[in-house]
Image (tube, rainbow, N blue to C red):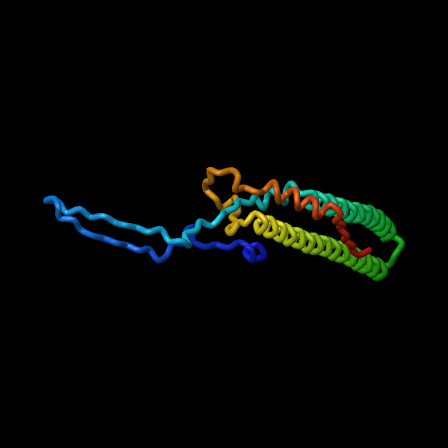
Amino acid sequence: MFFTNFIFFSSLISVSNYNFNKYVSYDSPLIKVKNNIKTPSNFEINKIGIIDFRFILKKSNAMKILGNKFLTLEKEINKKIKQKQIYFKKKEDILKKSKADLSEAEYKKRIKLFKAEVFEIQNKYKEERSLLNKSFQKIQKDVKDLLAQVIKDVSIKKKINIVLLKENVFLFNDKNIDFTNEVLELFNERTKSMKIIITPTN
């Protein structure tokens, strides 16, 4: 998965080389135990960031442009299909009316040709829809990959070592670790000149 390329999961606290100096004092009937714990110099808490990936995609200008482009092309395909349906309905009606003037063999031949033409057109628009869907999915993946890169860039700039998806976080009390809006702003900036080109078959 592209997102796992830059989300690093490690232990929240890295602690090693504790020095324990335990001694026992017998100056009372009770044994007293004292721990002398020295905090290691490499004690470090990893900085964590929270990101709402789905929210950014939903609100981003890039996905809005992509969605609108897809709907426009889909409407164009539906319009052509509707026009063909009207054409075939008229052609079918004419064919039925001509049945009385044709021999049985000729009528069956024309029916066969008519069905073949319908089948060809159906396949054509099926392929066109498939191309549109595949193109949309490809561009959508590219947009997600770009967003992932933006998140990585911002996290490095903010010196964040661990990035978690907001949908997977049960609770976080510090709202400052959520840098979703900052990423959304930068993502919109980087995609403001983006052009969506999908060319279905004619």
